[in-house]
Length: 446
Image: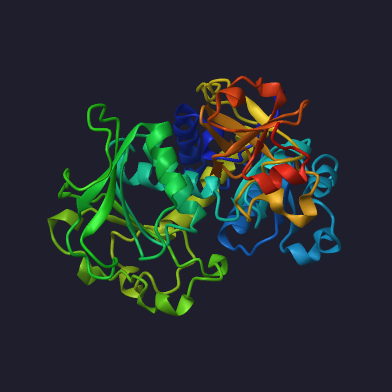
């Protein structure tokens, strides 16, 4: 059956209805993993992994083989022509088409999957782009919770550990907010969730961000305070308030993450992480934790005791197993081999896209637009607000507030809050962070 190419770069690429419909398909696959080899015969999956992976890569390859298709794989960047300086765009142009019918990509640069989706002629699935997103892990996590709890709305989910660099946490937080779950954020000190994630949760998902008391849970970090995120409370639009403390009477799931040592920055001391949280069954006694599912995207290091493995509340190995049927459903859907009776995501409110080879660049040094091998990628920003200007990187979602605006024809420069700047039409605007950046591009004061 023919269909327009669809990619899965972000969890936003599927509507809530589509996600729930894919869960139903995954349930059918899970009931008989060997019974669907006739669904994708002749289809080839290419797994391009420029970072290490075990579960994600093998579960995708297993999923395609169980659908009756074939697999070709590049399991590390140094074994590809990227080691010779080949761009990601050229790689996916070659692989997507005669080589393969669908591409699964893991890459260290944030926003790399969106670049690949633009240049590949076949569907691209994001299997993790730096610390940005990991949407198929999110599908697996949501599917696990849905099977365990029967629904996603109104769940109390505690996210713990490394919330700063865990791309799994960032994707999951957005997805749970979409489904109306409540989030409790309990980071290891120094590894708090980025402010940009909290701002987006509040602005794009209409949530409240407040303090909450979750009690003294030994091993989950210092202090009693956690951040509590609840959906759609129109008369209490608070941000980091302490006056609305809430004691949670239940926690449906604790999602633990390992320390992402490979992403620690120069100023961060990994030796301080010797006190990193470790979960043990003895910490989770009492009524509040009776039905708490313990989740982890794996691999674990020491953050979950092996004593938890035999506890009926441990879900992490079940999570990994469910990665196969949900990825079978996703592959079959994107290849057009199955249809779901659900509408796609609604089109976003039309916003201006700012694109320029000079001036403003993404401040996120891990963004694909700052990668030396992807210099052909021109920075692009969604204009979230015009006065004062607020822009979000199309590729990695990092936000920036430029302080200067230039006129592309007169080359005159104005403060972004000046009336003269606001009169410059969108097509003639050039944004800058500072005067040095503007001067280098040939812009100056009248």
